[in-house]
Length: 108
Image 1 (cartoon, rainbow, N blue to C red):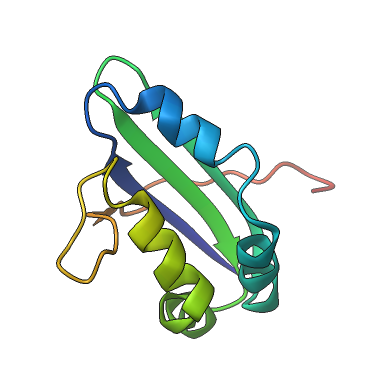
Image 2 (cartoon, rainbow, N blue to C red; image 1 turned 90 degrees about the vertical axis):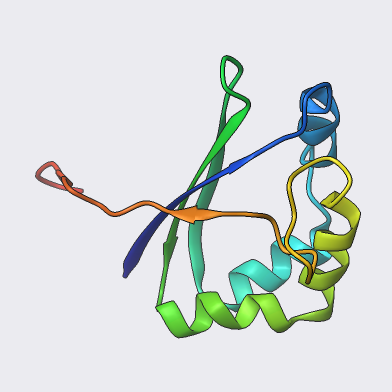
């Protein structure tokens, strides 16, 4: 299993819309994530900075990267591009976060 963490952001005034669009996400997108080995995926929001912190546990880096080429992921990116900083291919501007500490308790 691979743990992934990354930061993105949302445009000013679009915070509520970002949350609305994720409540819930499209079922087709959720299915694609699971089919590509996503075990768990959370996004947290910092209202002081408008930063989004994403955390995912995935089966492999290759399967995670393959999500970007799915039609549903591409549609999702187009759907989200107006409310968050995006790259020319519509993917969200994202910065990888390097893990420096991890603790797993006994029995977990």
